[in-house]
Image (cartoon, rainbow, N blue to C red; front, side):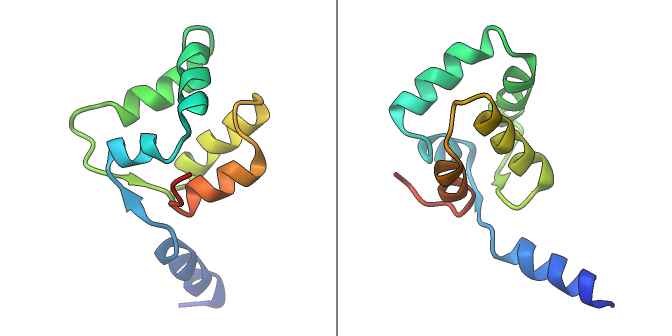
Length: 94
């Protein structure tokens, strides 16, 4: 095991896993409403939240690159600030 492998393990361990409902509750009401409206016209946002809403999904891993990438995309689309993205990734309820 090299230093990069160890860092990856430590980074993964620092991000919580939350249920899909808990994940949605990490967003404020106004953020959820704006994201829901954006789903109608943005296939990337719609695809991500389709996965979150899949009844087979047991948890959302906030350390996954795909989860963080989706949150980065929401920032790029102006639906989240970087500070809010960082709070969500840390599992901090607003």
